Length: 129
Image (cartoon, rainbow, N blue to C red; front, top):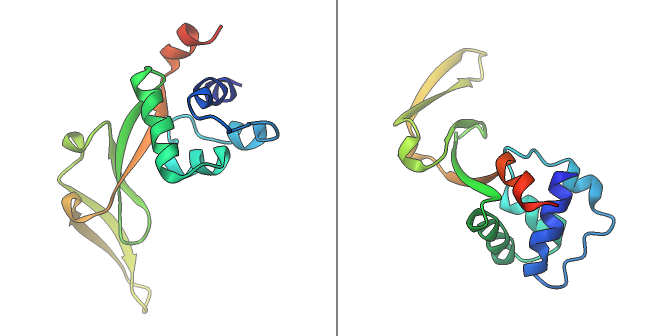
């Protein structure tokens, strides 16, 4: 319900993005990890418009921004409010063809960084009537 109100309020900034029939997709979002691609797909807009939507929500105090690093096996190695708070090294487990499992440590600077957004619960009461 809260995310639906959020999308309804902020989509006013991006004309032509009706949300009718998308309630299930919106309510399926994890309010602690909202990705630009999810927003793009739900609103049916371009990547840059979805980024603008999310960044508008950050400026309005509705979202906060976070960063995560993705390990080579596709798992998330760590996440934080910003890059400065990420650990310098993360570990992930890899299995070779013979079934041996090995812990691999890798510098976060060498991994892809992904921006995500989090719904600020405090802002909900203030912004939604």
